[in-house]
Image (cartoon, rainbow, N blue to C red; front, top):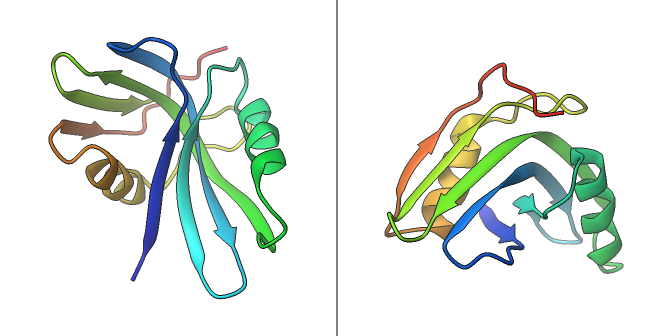
Length: 118
């Protein structure tokens, strides 16, 4: 069974548009794939902030790409696009699975495009 989760830190209750990364976390008895989005300027900042939050059970952490995520809670839509200039694009099928689990009642439009937000 895949362990999938999303961590999205937002101050705006209705609309969110920020960078995200997909992280593979290896722990003692499982591997988790986590979509992480914090309101930060660079994908590498998100990676460092998330790594600081992990406990000692996390044996290895690998960033598997990134992009931009938009969450519109009013319209119940989630969209990803772009890619990370540092980590490249993520496995989009994995992103779709994570978002479907995190936002079961939302329409999901998960894509990787050539757009890189500076």
